Length: 442
Ligand code: COA
Image (cartoon, rainbow, N blue to C red):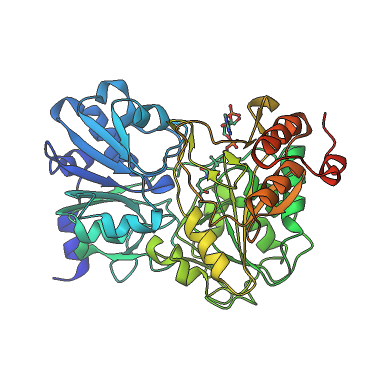
């Protein structure tokens, strides 16, 4: 049978496809902008027909109809990266959080994460019967290999991407043709504080560096400060619109990359419609499975690798909490630690964690004597390298506990320096006059 015959035989509808999902099954869903929205809609419409179906997913954008209260009890959501729309559902009793490095998710699918059904959004087939996974490669191959039933929505508006994104018609069971706009990630213009952080980060970036940019407001602000750098490269878990601006201006060309020269490498992409247009059929952009992009050994092959991630708080020893505010799970670890380790192992590599010095409108210091009770340590004090705030950059790697505390006080907000100085003196004795003079307080 040629692939077109097989394709025609597998053509399906959301309703027919979800008839292959049964009570107690685990369904692994496509990630971020590749979430399968037709199937989500059909499941939500028919939620009464299901009991205790476990849905595994990672970050979600915009609306996910399966989060509606009417679906509670029918679907349980397990996720290892939370976003605005999933935080309540997963933190409350309808769901559960799954701590794991993103890079380990593919190897856990089919074992720790059972996978009865895999549902992904892909492109229509090419002339040889291959769909492209489009903007999210991450764990899709692993789920498609492990699942008993594979459902794909072939979205005409899904960009075609290169790298390792192809799956064949023969690998799937239900094909649902559709055309709908991809969900987008809104990015606000950077604040003055974020721009100042971006400028300090840019002092650590030299021509020819390869960058990883994490999630959140800071990476975008850093990119805006890199307009005077040349021959930059990208090897990242994800990227968004800021990278496109720098490619168009010629700052990013990958010409000095020591792995995947000339290519922008990631495992997923999320951003504006313009970003999705830019990556469509663009041979400069290559997406690979996350167990490849986020492997520290792979990352470390990039000479002058610089990872730039953000966090929620840091204690005076340099322990970094990036994913929970106290007991409340806020996001997930993603690739933060893997990129920090990969960058640290790379020749002339640097690992940066950048954050505003305060949160909640300036009433909370993000540099703290202790992490908030219950917070998960995302990056340990043994892995941490640079911490950057709008007051400067502190290199903690290779520094003692006393020196780390001093360096962190220097980049804390002046309002909170007296409190941190008191804590320093409780732990280590009298603070040096130099530090007191260097660190004006409010
Ligand atoms: N205490 C209380 N509230 C805090 C806080 C703290 N220590 N730190 C932050 N907040 C609040 C902020 O005030 C803000 O509240 P608002 O939404 O009401 O304004 C909210 O929490 C989000 O903080 P913000 O720093 O603006 O988040 P962000 O969108 O820039 O994302 C991370 C920052 C750390 C959550 C994000 O980078 C992340 O999830 N990192 C971990 C994963 C990672 O690094 N992956 C890398 C590979 S992609």
